[in-house]
Amino acid sequence: MPVFNVHYSDDFDQKLYVEEVIRKWNQGDQEFHIYTSGTTNKPKKITLSRELLVWSARTTQNKLDTTSHKIMCCLPVDKTGGFMQLIRALVWDCEIHFFKPSNQPFIKINNHSFTTISLTPTQFKSSFEDSFKKLNKFQHILIGGAAFNNPSIFIERLKHPLIWYTYGMTETASHVAMQNLSRNEASLKVLPGVNIRQNKTLEIHIPEVNLHFKTNDIVKFENGGFVVLGRSDDVINSGGIKIHPQQLETTIEEVFEKMNLKKRFYISKEKHDKYGEVPVLTIEGNPDFNQGGFTQILTQQLPDYHAPKKIYFTPKILSTDTGKVIREAY
Image (cartoon, rainbow, N blue to C red; front, side, top):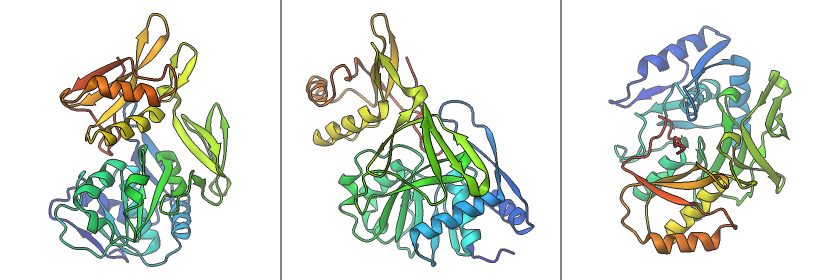
């Protein structure tokens, strides 16, 4: 039996997986295996050492600066976000409740006394709209797994919890950098014991656990930390100008907000005879808004040559089971 309290919702379907991880942990296994999200290709199996998992959980606990936790987990447990919540509960020796992953995780919860939760940006935004009071009861909300555009429009209304934007990947066993959005930090700050540098893309070194990993991410160092511009394989080379989709998406979301439109979308690229590649915008749903006005505002707010050259509409944008948008190039 585990030394901590674990609970499951009636519809949670990964109980056997959780119990197997607990069994392996309690018997002292030194390696654990999980899969990447499969955003850009097929999910791949990653081996994580017990040493790294304990380091990650302890470092996060020190960063949150609290010793008492009651975790709510509503992410897939066989992927990094959910898996590390289980590991934290084991290392922190605290209570954890598992719920079936959903973009609206609080629908079936009338009241709660949870202190800590990890959410994707999509889950957070959906919960902000329909479960604001429940979000406000947490002490810590960790947001990660994908870009979180324009957080200020949400954060300024949440007074009680500390909201953290996190950066990491499967290979590093969750985040290696955190940004305190509640205290208006302007960039991600690496956790103690983490060294980073950019050699075309970001490289991460954690000497204590002998980890060195080269990411596919391009970052910009500023405000005593760094900002992620996007993945190197997503960069659009348009007539010699390198365009990062994530930056365009931040502006697009701001325009949609001003137009009072709730739209899922993403930027990808299309081949072009003159420029090599150009940005294109894919929007979920029907073209039921003033596209001319939208394009005009967007062109005014974006740098020259950055505006999407085409707009496509699709019935549904595909996502991984951890909520990351799958960008389909044309």
